[in-house]
Image 1: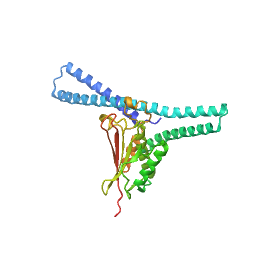
Image 2 (image 1 turned 120 degrees about the vertical axis):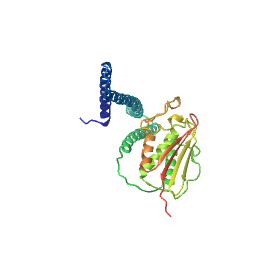
Image 3 (image 1 turned 60 degrees about the vertical axis):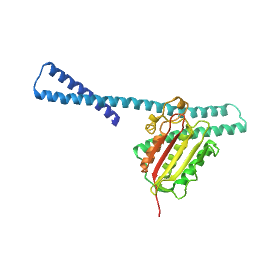
Image 4 (image 1 turned 90 degrees about the horizontal axis):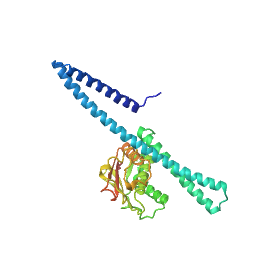
Length: 300
């Protein structure tokens, strides 16, 4: 049976704890027997320092394991819901079509809903697979020069069609400049734009006003910012939201479904392309802004 790195880490912490207990026993016995040798005193001080450091490391490890387990439990619950709901819906419509005659218009409505549910299923599966791929750095590095502005415009149009949005709900702050070129994987960078847009739409509620901006910061950098008027993000959570499985916990997000992988995938792809990502928010209920910066290919 193959031993995972996590199992090795747990075994190391257990062995460390046993060793620390043994050292503590030796020191206590030594002091009880009233050993006065200088060597033992020096060793006692050293071992005591090691014990303190070991206890601190052990505590940190346990806290991280508790948080990791909580995040993984949340992820499993989210994925289970994301898979179960569309499957249940598809099964219900199929049973209806099988057991009784349905009018042609209603039949087409059933087909449309089932296709939407299969898209939701496929999206969840692809997100989980993509998270594993970017985490382990798999996949060929087939990069090419891409028109960044055109790619973002395509992503915006696709999001409008998919969610049946009016132009004012999802718009550009200014016309994207032409001739902005980046070097990268077309599929991965489209995933970045799509995930950021989906995230903004998901957390904006019914009154959606999302503004997208593409800009050339200088000759070497290009930026994409997506600003929404949604539920916002507490300041204490801004650095954690890009962690794998992590989701902000608040009353406003209780009814928002997700796997906690979208922003993790975005950050991993952006970093792989030599860029960075940041999030800004003035607090809950005040919206948020996500901004990525990527190296630009500049031709004289």
